Length: 289
Image 1 (cartoon, rainbow, N blue to C red):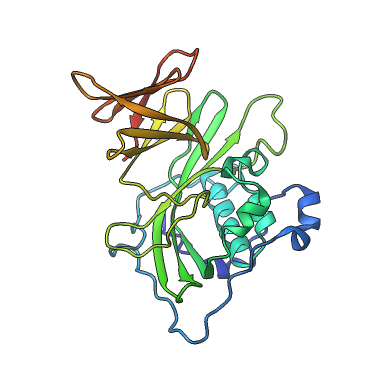
Image 2: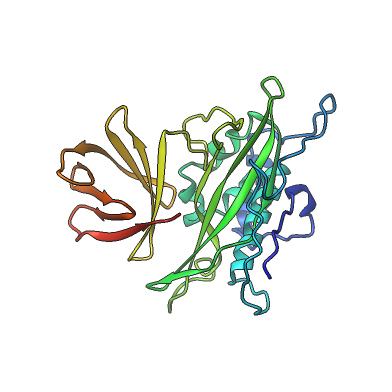
């Protein structure tokens, strides 16, 4: 049976990070510009919502394969997420940044901006849920890991609680480098749920989404898209791998919804969506529930 991992980042000292760029590891203390979160002594200990309760992770007990743990398994991907949040809690932002795909660029930020984005927190912790099944396609592997992030803000020591998912990616084709074969963070969708407290996102905060409606899609080519709908301004922002592809304007259609701009187009009806990039045929996608 799959049991909820529920490993708080501070309890992960025994988890060794997967190999990152060795040069990054040697200069981490010199480059990190953020201030490592530390315990707040004048506040009661944080008690995040328990699994299966409002605000907590799902109490997942669905069966999974009995195969042994390996670095390329879904459990290996979850260990990368554990390591990532342990590094953030310790203020080792350069090493955490290196666990993002494409040499950190999938975070949508540079290393120094990534570190600075955590300066608003006085405490920062995470609980990690059981990983989902691996999605495979065209030599690419994807897995989603549920996460609960909680802590306190430096501004007034306000507590926050957010939930969401981390999507990891690895390549498995002939000629792939050792780095490409490792699980790396491709995207993050972490946000407060209705009625829950969360930090006010600043531009570029990695993984924090603050918008009226978000839909996530799994596409036939193995990619995943996040669509952030802004109905007040009649537009949608499409994100893939942590990067913004385009912001599209709403179009009038007889059925469903459609958005388009500069050769990009998103059309959807119910859970089915097609996304078109300039010069490419439409890619069928299905909403992830």
